[in-house]
Length: 223
Image 1 (tube, rainbow, N blue to C red):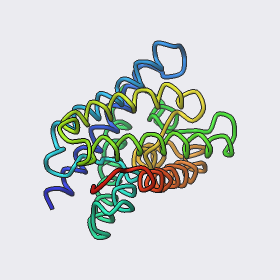
Image 2: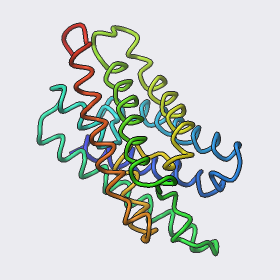
Image 3: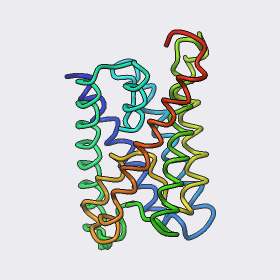
């Protein structure tokens, strides 16, 4: 249970700090807000990797959990429980963020860091599949035992790659690459964010599965 709770806490931190930065910086209004939001998500991952990595592996993302499961690194039970607690953590984080926004006089429906397909659902789906595949591939490689001592720096590599992923994706979708991180804010935002939520679930899961397939083709030995 401790590893499941660790995933809940980690996903809460990622969602609250990442989406919170997007709200506080009015992400998308200028270059600085985009860079700041990207850094917030990446640094949140780095912080959690070195906080709960030794407990749960710090997936804090159902797409990563799926990739780990498909490459034989975890059981189906753990896979399902990880995803459940990740979603719970994200929903709790979105609830707290919505409370912060509402008590500050903001519009919860538009200021919770929810994702949206700026150029249509087809474009959004493609972006989320590709970016998630790249991100999960980095996770699988950085945490592989075949990397030897270098996997001690996995948290840093993963966090920095997430910054890059956001720098590319924010313009198109706001960047999800994480179903849990999208589910939480969408519940409170409603409207378009909720109607397009399927894109930010299907896309990342497809990307995670694609990354697992690529990794199986290129990994040099035992996981």
